View 1 (tube, rainbow, N blue to C red):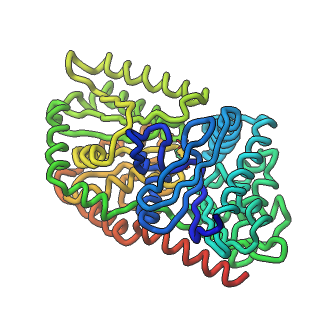
View 2: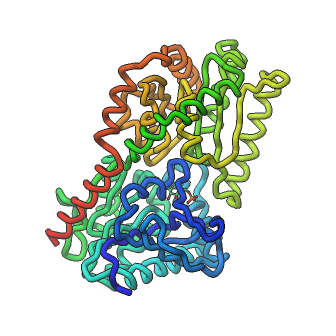
Length: 465
Ligand code: G6P
């Protein structure tokens, strides 16, 4: 069994064990998701992916998908509730995103977090070959690096956090803050999206653990756990190729016709999550319609909101509020057969998304806090015509790279309204320099470059240990 030389450990497998039709499994590539990001890096490589199949209860055997060996981890209904919905998505997720919703603490959830992390670590220890690279992903699995090192000191262990790492004032609230930091420090290289997060981590390890920070990372147990910022990206070439396809161009034209041939289309694509700033954006749009600065249906908003974490109370309430607001806007500003907001609470495939991106004059990505936001990058990659405008929150990791976007503070409703108007008024039906520059950036800094730079740094971190 111990023969895998590259092992990815992530909360979920990139396939859904319940969704296979006639035993054919497809790689799950939800918009902006971790599985989608890693697909181009891993497909047709001799890699093994350890994760949960998406259904609580006994796991089922899965075939290799796109050449990647799938190793399912089983989660019981209780594990799902207390680890995934509880500690990961009701304690860590809100706290790591500026506590825009309050973090909830239950001691039972911590026990589940430890238990489930141990299960993933054990699975990795079982399959990894001697000296293999094991790459642990995200906030669900912060204890895995140290658990794995305890069993298999021969391994080269990487950890990458896809979400923001919060400032000390917030992280210090966690009752198990020391254990969480120690868990991550089991890795040879701890990667973050932004330099800011690296600084937060350094400060916290010094403050909570009394660790010394050197130029490579954090000194712990006589070794250095290296740290660094590696902004994740997308498969730029793949999105470009998709966006150039004739059927996609035709579909984009049809979408605009179906919307009633408006002069301007604003598009947002989000997981239905309170971090995404959907309510702030709807409020800005409603006020612009009420002020008469925008008119429907000359301008329409298409809001794709992919259902997410639906049993968690904060997500349920958000969905109710968003849907009430969409109904209110359409009630006030729509006409029979003509909506001001087209709200689609569905999963779109990549071809449909590419068509939507090409149909949109302005892409509005305005999260209150976001580790990166790959949807913003996908929109830019899809604009092979160099047209269109990106309205982007300062609080998305992507803002550090896509500096030519229309940057906004989403909490500032007036600023949001003015910047949206500016983006709509710029003639984005013409190729523009901002889009050309952002596209050039993404061609160089794509997902392959990200994986290469991370894995090279991991190799260097291990060479020095
Ligand atoms: C964020 C996280 C990912 C997660 C994704 C979807 O992007 O960083 O780890 O997979 O959200 O969330 P879900 O709860 O559906 O896995």
